[in-house]
Image (cartoon, rainbow, N blue to C red):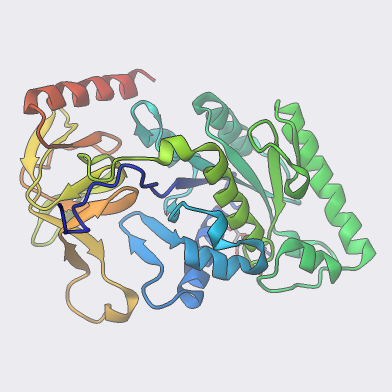
Amino acid sequence: TNTDPESAADPGALRTPIVAVLGHVDHGKTTLLDRIRGSAVQEGEAGAITQHIGATAVPLETISEMAGALVDPTDFDLPGLLFIDTPGHHSFSTLRSRGGALADIAVLVVDVNDGFQPQTEEAISILKRTGTPFVVAANKIDTTPGWNPQEGEPIQKSLEKQSERATSRLNENLYELIGDLSSAGFSADFYWRVQDFQSNIGVVPVSAMTMEGIPDLLTVLMGLSQRYMKEEMSIDVSGPGVGTVLEVKDERGFGATLDVVLYDGVVREGDTIVVGGRDDPIVTEVRALLQPRPNAEIRTEKRFERVDEVRAAAGVKIAAPDLDEAMSGAPVRVVRGDDVDAVKEEVRKELAKIEVD
Ligand code: GDP
C-alpha cells in the first residue's frame, strides 16, 4: 500500500474551481479582488489563504468564516475558490483550456448606478460564447443616496438597516439591471429568488468598498460550483499536470519563467513538460516550482519560495531551461508515462485551436 499521502492517488478528489472577474472599466473588478484577498488574509488562520502566482486561493474554511451563517462548510466538498488575479475580459478570453474558457465560473461586475456599458455587453457575449456559468455582482450599493454602510455584512442584514428611501433607490437600479440582463437573453433575478442557477442568473448586490454582500457572493459562487460543476471538478489529482501560460517573465537567477494556471493534475520538480512556443512546442524539464513568499516573510531577499509539487487548481511559476520562445495563452502539459511526441502533438493541436478562435 502507498503510505505517502502526498502521492496517493485520490480519484474522487475535487479540485478548486477557477473564478474569473469581468466587467466594464471602473465598475470595481480590481477593488473586489483586492478586498477579497485582504479580508481573507485578516480572517483566515495564518496561512489559510494562499497567494499563488497570478491567482488567489480562498479555502473553504476561510469562505465560511467570511460568510458567517450563510455557509455551513459541511454542505460543501469543494476545497474553496481560486480567483484569477488579472481581471477583465481580455485576460478571460485569451486564457483558454482545451479551447474553452480557463475559468470554470465568472463574476460579472456591474456598477449598480451605471448599469450595462459597452464592456459589460462584450463580457456577456464572451460568457455566452464560452458557455461559462456566471453571477452578477451589482457593485457599489454603498453609493446609493442615504446608504447606511454595514461593513462586511450579508445583504439581508444590511438591508434591514437601510431606510425605505435608500432601499427603493437601490431596487430601482437593480430592476433596471435585471431588465438589461433579460434584454441580453438571460433570465435573471435577485440571487435569493433563484432556484436553478443554470437557467437563471443570480444578481448579488454588493459593495467592494464596504464588503456588504460579499459573504453572499462567495456563497453563491460555492453553490454554483458545487451544484453544477462537480463532474468537471472531479479529477485524478495525481494525473499529469495540464495548465495555461498566463505570462512569460524573466526572473533574476532563473531566466525566462512561466506563470501558469494549472487546471488539472499535478506538476513536480524534475517533470518533463511540453509548452506551446512561437515555432514548435518546447520540451524541457522543470528546474523549480515557485510560489510567492507569504507577506510576513517579505523582508527576506528572495521573493519566491520553492515547492516540490503543485496540484490543480493553482497558479505557479515554472522555472526551466529554454523558455524564451514560450507564449502566453499557450498550453503546458506534463509528460508522465506518455510518449513525448504524442504530448507535443496534443499541444500543437490545442495551439491551433486557440489561434483559429
Ligand atoms: P476596475 O476598473 O473594474 O478594476 O475598477 P476599480 O476596482 O479600479 O474601481 C474603480 C473605482 O471605483 C475606484 O476608485 C474604486 O475605489 C471605486 N469602487 C470600486 N468598488 C466600489 C464600491 O463598492 N463602492 C464605492 N463607493 N466605490 C467603489
